[in-house]
Length: 433
Image 1 (cartoon, rainbow, N blue to C red):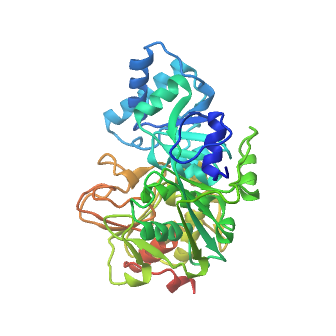
Image 2 (cartoon, rainbow, N blue to C red; image 1 turned 45 degrees about the vertical axis):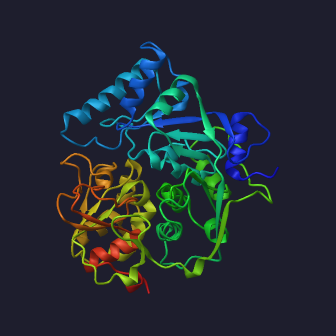
Image 3 (tube, rainbow, N blue to C red; image 1 turned 180 degrees about the vertical axis):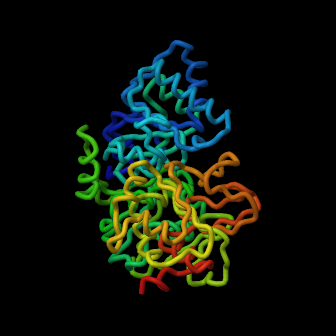
């Protein structure tokens, strides 16, 4: 039976020659990730169910990354990190990236990739819905709850229902003013936030193959906003170059079989995609940026796993260089590696940091999730009132970035940067053409 990429990965992980949509299979887990928000709950369930002195199935396969509520004076948040530290010491877990140390990395999804934990053909679970980002590396990667994560800690396995696969092909070439964020917002706008419920979203076509690794990560990051179980992209030399530069561990990519069944398939002419915005309060509330020129914004935000990677900042700097922002503009690098890149990467002979500083942006010194998930009242960039924010983050539900009175428009780094300069939602073509 011909199988899709997702089916092939799950078949291999479950020791079967083939699986199909709807099959329930026990899969062997290659990597489990948790962080400071869900980690303590996961640890508590693990100890309750397996015993106070129980050992995790494989310390080498557990990755723990505090990243959400860490740069705060909130004692309860500090206690969460203390629980992670105690557990890491008890279990001898080597892959722990502790805040306040030289090992700290930043946002878990980007840090997983940068530290070589995202490898083709493998199974990655994480206690965060945007774990699906790692599907860009030809993985089966998805978010799970604390109970499932605790079970994996004790057994290294999880019962998974094989999802049917939706296929999205982009033929040709994306225009130079279009970014991956525009692409995935366009798709979510087409299918709706429930359109891919418990389905794999498979992306292909010439235009997808031309995307950088970071742009592919953006596409897969937001499949959960379409309801998807996971996102996945073919591995190629772009994938291999990125992964091999970060790990020496062997891996075996998968390729979907010709004739594999898809429950939905759609082809796009990549050249027709335009700068796209998701209006409040849903990621599928799609509009073209050029249609929203009368919407005034009070702040702009560039950051998160979706929009805080180095290529995101490079693209934003192309527009901001030599200009001043008209509204409060907050910049938060996703990882410490990216934070360093802001001081070394250049656009037009100037470092990104110098460009943003001259533009009047507010740069966070710390890499983290920051305002993407609202967080404590002292979270950097948090919306504290009826702001109108245009953001590179992935969700715009009421209260997502803080105040329930705030309005959040989702857009690409190009569109956010252009809008920051004008003070209104702006199609980046006003600056790029």
